[in-house]
Image (cartoon, rainbow over all chains, first blue to last red):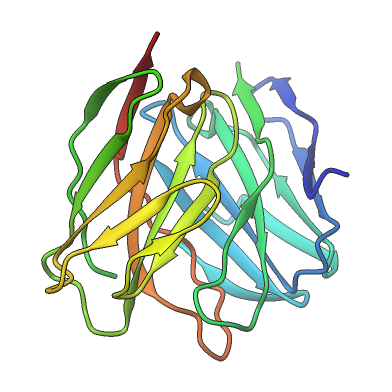
Length: 114
Length: 114
C-alpha cells in the first residue's frame, strides 16, 4: 500500500553515465515533485509537474530531465553524471486543489557517483 | 515565502511533551505555518499546519501566537521514534491550486532520550 514509491533505492554509478530514477504515486494526486538533499542535508525543490505539465523548474542543470508519462508517474533522467550529483533524491506528490495541500514524500533514492 | 528560525537541536525525555519553537516574524497574512519531520534515512513526513488558530491532530498540536510571529509544535508524549529533524515552513496555502515546492531550512534535530 505504498503511497509514493521510488526505484531504485540505491544507485551507484560512474561519472559520465546516464541514469534514471522512477517515481510512482497511488494517491490519485495531480502534482508531483522532485527534491534533492545534498550531503549537508539541505532539501531543495528541483521540479514540479501538474497533470504531466512542468510547473516549476528551479535552477537545475539541463543534464536533469524530468518526464511524466502520466499523472501517477514522474521519472528523473540524469545525463553525464558528475560527482556533485551524489545526493538523495526524493519524489513527492500532492493534490492540486485545496488550501494548504500536504506533500507526501517517497523513501528517497541514494545516488552515489564515483 | 517567509523565513523561519528554529533552534538547531533539542533534547526531550521519553514520555514527556516535546515543545519545538519556530520564529516567523515576517509571515504574511495569507501564509500558513507547516511542520514536517524527517526521520533518519526516510522521506519528509507531514505533521500539521495552521493559519492562525491552534490545531491538533493525532500526531501533534500546533500553537500559533496571536501576532502569528511564532509558533510551537507540541508532541504530547514523545517516544524514541519521534527522534527526527523537524522543519517549520511558512508558505502560502494553495487555494485554487498550486505546485510550489517546499522551502526547507535547517530544522531542529529533536533527540528523544530514553
